[in-house]
Length: 289
Image 1 (tube, rainbow, N blue to C red):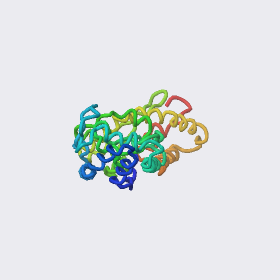
Image 2 (image 1 turned 60 degrees about the vertical axis):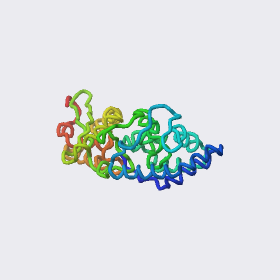
Image 3 (image 1 turned 120 degrees about the vertical axis):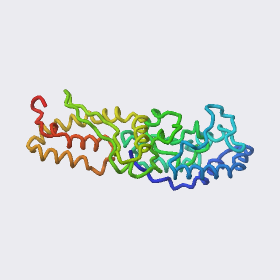
Image 4 (image 1 turned 180 degrees about the vertical axis):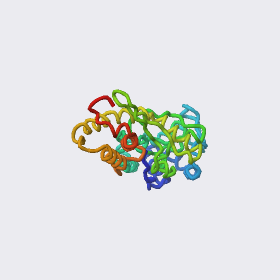
């Protein structure tokens, strides 16, 4: 999981950029007449971000595109701002879309960079929270797997909220809470688990478990780590064969500290686990481990 800087674009300015591209004068005038409601919704999102209580923001009913959400704006009006006046390459607000996309440097923040960014994800799904369809703080660069695997609903409790890459506590991104167990099997396996520090608040621990589960990270990390683990073992039998067990452990520990990988990404987690598994770094892999 990777923390990103909050998009610098002004939320009200982005809203107006989308609105000004609406060709129908009556529809455009309706958006402008509700500008005050949009400003209030931006403030509400900021307040929810300060208390990490996005789950408590007002929700729209499932479906019902014609249902009024705020003022005289329907759910369809609000989601159209994104799909029709922000996403298309010919729209002025597409500049904001692209700027938010490139800020992640191609690495999806939800899965620790397993996937390459291919779209923007609505942290609060626009199907339930259409007021935030074009709010920059609610638009997060995302890979295809995280975007399609994430439910279109959002938790009803604080503990069910996934991590917010812009607005969550930095410790979730800077301190280790993903671990792995090295399984002495044939072939050797890795089991990734969510294990936050016991000193963290219970609701924080529950949120991390929810994120880990919702994005299917145990399985996805395991798939990524399998090929890398095979390479490590091959290297130990080849180019690293001359290293003593202590030196091999030091090699693994150094890889676990690589600043190029997220502290809770699959790669650093894997090497950290290997460096802390005595039977692994003491093995020569020439016979049964």
